[in-house]
Length: 177
Image (tube, rainbow, N blue to C red):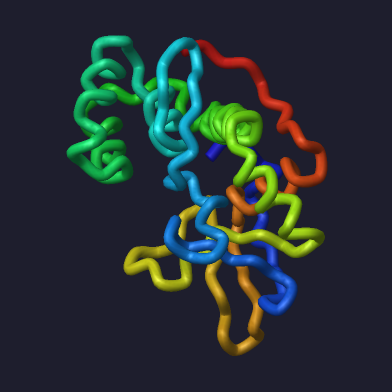
């Protein structure tokens, strides 16, 4: 990924950390899959993940098709095929974190429940807990090291959420979509 400031493995003491894994769990509203409807450019999105992958596509025709398919297919499963099918934006790796900042700003503006959860998290660390993932964790989350009782990982999502909690808005480089 293009963002060197996030290319660092961070460590977070588990007892001082809020880890979220699914929308059904206690802190599930922090997940990108949490149902937080928002309208962007006149289009309604059910959650951050849907908006994020919509922007990932390189043309309007694919975006329109994607919106029709989403209710019937897992977001991540569909998105995994974008690069293979040649429909992912050429600049995706350079803008992905800025796109997530954009999406989280919209979620923050649209969802009182999300704003309240961020406020309720106080000064605790936030991590997207990928400890039970079958595959190797990605850059967005962190895993719990049971030997040290610490989460470790790049934790881009958690870092963005903590920044949003503190600043109430995330700055991002503009991109076209």
